[in-house]
Amino acid sequence: MARGHQKIQSQQKNAKKQAEMKKSKGHDQKMAAKAALVFTCSVCKSQMPDPKTFKQHFESKHPKSPLPPELEGVEA
Image 1: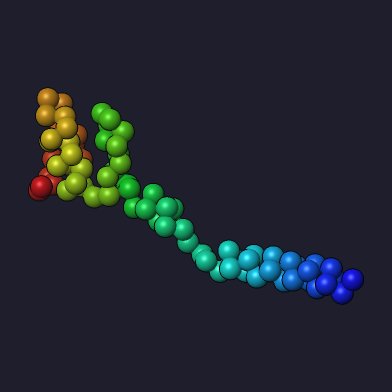
Image 2 (image 1 turned 90 degrees about the vertical axis):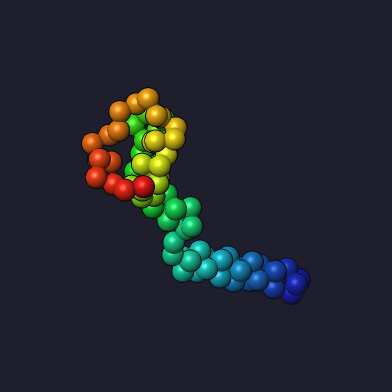
């Protein structure tokens, strides 16, 4: 039954290795992308990464709505 014992040892070694890989990975691309979306449209709740994109979105998608005060000085 040496093979049975080797199998268990191998599984334990692999589990430890996988745990270290997961811990050392550090950051997740999805979380980083989500953190970059800082501006939220008040009309449709879409998220944008910067004020220039936000203003372009607002002007094209909501032309009849008044421009929010935070976008007044932004050049698109």
